[in-house]
Length: 260
Length: 199
Image (cartoon, rainbow over all chains, first blue to last red; front, side, top):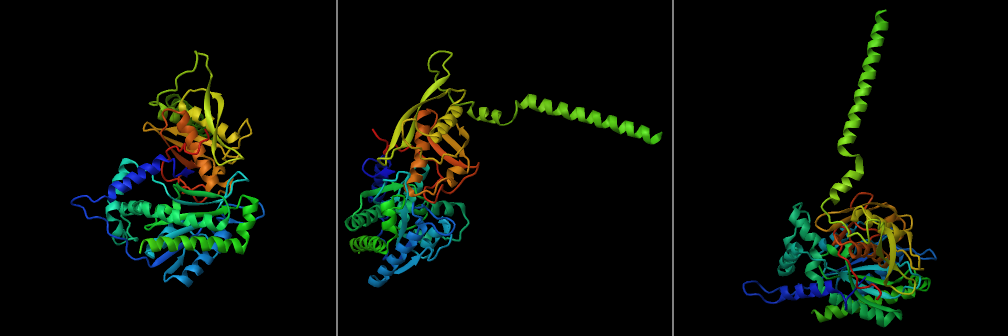
């Protein structure tokens, strides 16, 4: 819902990020991200939670799993990364456990895979989301803390901690990675546009729960609309699923090359 | 004889205590003004009332509802007359009910048609809390787009029309809920987003 070009929140977020990454005397400049070893792929929905449904009976949860397995195979074949899936079969997994999987494996990148649904039958195309910030004053202060400490966020937050502040920090984890997530979204979306031959809906920001607690660059890919009968049939085909996986893989590869 | 007397006394005691109970209930009702309605008024007491439109007799006000359309991905405005007052929370409930009921001009409501608005609270700090029936979550198999449209149609409708509302929190059946359909985070208050409203 939030287009990047005309979104005031995005502009504010960008300003905040820029402000906090400028070298400030007395504060250590943020260090380079540590080398990425693990990619976590999140097949959206699962189990009782089917996600969006198509007119021909296809379910979002099945398509997201199929694409995720193909993407995992591609990364493992061609890159030296460990790939962890938040689910590898048709089971319910809470959103909290999905981000915990990413954080416990010290994920370097997080890709959540979805198929879109709209009330409008004709809605179609691919889009890639990263988290939007609705930062209040209080959250801005926390953001400042996170921006200055993002590189060792993993070691600072003990996932087993019950401490309230620690829980709040986890809840805000993604805020420290908005800039990288935006870049990753751009590269992935560029490849989806090049490969799928469907409408390019661009990169957008939204307050998606799955992205909030992930402590690494994270995007949510909406490959196509399962609510659109033409695109539903594409999504259900192994050929199109492979193209989606290939496009995301290429986007990841470009992001990683740029960050080497 | 003895048992009869005893029976009479206990019957009298029963009647007396019954009367006392009725009196107590009446006293409670008198002082609290009766249940839910009072609670809502209390919450709204400090919120400035919407300016009366027209004279003393003005019984309606115009609100702008945000619907979706078949041809694009934008939110489209539609004007609607709703009954006015007594509080902005009452009007907000009516505006949302009209949003769920649907368009009069061929636009589409982004909310499941069976959804009911249980209550709207508007707090002094500008946070409106909307409590929907469970149908708002269970009535649709949401995708990202339809879930965003549902949430922002509600948020935009409230903030656009009601001066005392700055942010909106969504509840389902009186309780916090993580998301409506697995996408949009409901744990925080939403600011409006007019970026996709058709011009």
